[in-house]
Amino acid sequence: MPVKPKTSNTPDSGGSHRNPQEVHQVSQWEVFKNRKRILRNPLPFHQEKFGEYGNTFIVHIGPGKRIVFTREPETVRNILQKNHRNYRKSELQTRDLAKYIGHGILTSEGDFWRKHRKMIQPAFHKEQLQGLLDLMYLAIREELSGLPEDQIIDIFPKMSDLAFQVVAQTLFRAGDFREDMNRLQEITEDNQRMLIREMRQPYLKWWFQMSGRIGHHLGLSQEARDILDNLIEDRVQSEKRRGDLLDMLLDARYDDGSPMPRRQLIDELIILFTAGHETTANALSFAIFLIASHPEVQQRLYEEVREVDFEGDKLHALRNLGYAQQCIEEAMRLFPPVYVIDRVSVNPETLQGHTFPGGTTWLLSIYELHRSPDLWDNPEAFIPERFQPDLKKKYSGFYFPFGAGPRMCIGNVFAMNEMMLTIGWLVQNYRITTPADVLEINPLISLKPGKVPLRLERRGSGLLP
Image 1 (tube, rainbow, N blue to C red):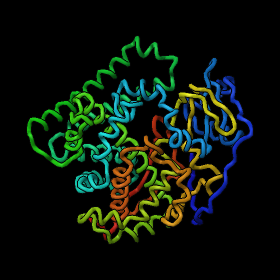
Image 2 (image 1 turned 30 degrees about the horizontal axis):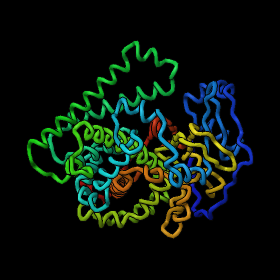
Image 3 (image 1 turned 180 degrees about the vertical axis):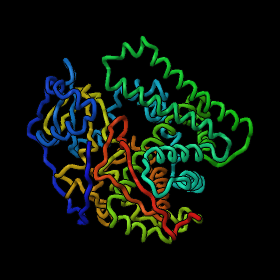
């Protein structure tokens, strides 16, 4: 879907939203007529229907099967926060995704999820993450220092490699495991492509099974588990502490004092690699493109980062990257990595004046919520000033780049630190331009960019020799 972000430097004055008096229906026939374009990219179809029918509508996808689409902020808050116990994740995550990445906090439900979320959460507290900032920065600097200069490059694969190595280094600290990490990255990306095929071509599931393709990818999943199992075993046998995330997870205990079983630990590590690098790479690529597309934004950002000492106290550096944070927050408004959230109701509930039965599947369109003209002034424009500290609080009821409620992304602070250090270092060292007026986007499990063409010109005042 081409997006042409152009700027207006007027912060939002806020907005109002409306509740539809009637829930409109999109027939299965209409879905069938649009099947090819929906298969390529469903977002334009969603956008048309929200424009035509308002903030909530129902899509019929088969006999007796329907999905309620919404961008209504109170409904989204109710499902994710206020009455979250009445909603569970769909089988797309708890079954289809779980078969490849295991049953960790991303793919589990109920008491099992609550127990493990409580167990893992302390490792991602701000105080714990401060001890990982040096590891994070070293991985970032290593990946960025080798970027080609004075030529057009696609930055997205570079950001994918960077985000994966940041997760690897903060999980396992120093060690000679680059080959293992490269293989783990290949498996992660290959299995995701297979899952997308299953999602978008469910009528071929029988063929994927009979041809052995699903079995092949399950074998790749086992290979990934074996890699992580060996790394964990090496750490346990060495009896050395390295102060990384793996140490924190090995130290985690259930309420009865017992440690996490090895199989569960591997499930959680796979999820950290899968979710931790994918969404961050996407968000970074979109943010850098938007900064490159808006020279006035980049100049203000450069003035902020020009004197920041990234080689010194990383926490102090982050405190001096306020405008960089605003740029990232605005980029995630326009291109939220988790662009839709699906939930299934357990019991009936009355929302927007209508009673929806238990078992209703909901699709919460974060992408459309973040671009709703009822909520945002000039919603298609890239305006980092929206998120300056004295304004951003008013968006808290309809800005959910990391989700919301008890299932909000556990690594949100980790990801923001990583993105701020990356963008700050890049702009301090390079002037970034792009030949592209529009950016193709690819909504898969997360919102991915197509090619992100950029040109990097070294600045004389940066850290590079």
